[in-house]
Length: 190
Image (cartoon, rainbow, N blue to C red):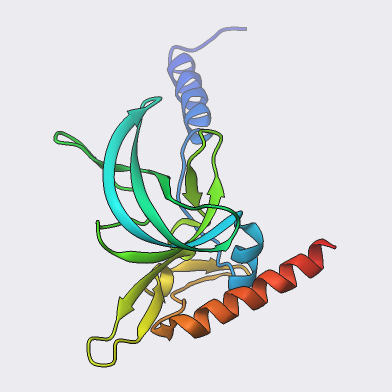
């Protein structure tokens, strides 16, 4: 069998494309209900952001955010916790990952958390598990808004990306919904 000159580069190119296709990654968040997130979370906390620090680890840039836990709604987290999320900013480099929340020192949030093998935490479904707490300056009432209220997530029932999420819900009502979701999750586990 005679091998033509053009067959070797073509075969090599096809092989390289096939190998590269296996390593490409994209970010698609599937829409989760509050009940699904409550079930997936090991810890649910109300916390205040203290500080952020970006660090390289195994060739990737990570942001480690320190929070003071103000209330624990599920789990045993208290004192200070660290949340580790992919991406971040150093003096020379910025890595942005779609769907990953970022936090500012001083802001208050409710986070649905999963522990990592390193002993810190990650946020369940990233922006879906992040709820910002804002106070109404006129009434003093605190309200929560889910980060995905402005981010498209994939809804498998409609096979479309939708922008949905909790927006401007009074914190007491939100906590009540979370507690109901936790009770329902415990019933399903039994």
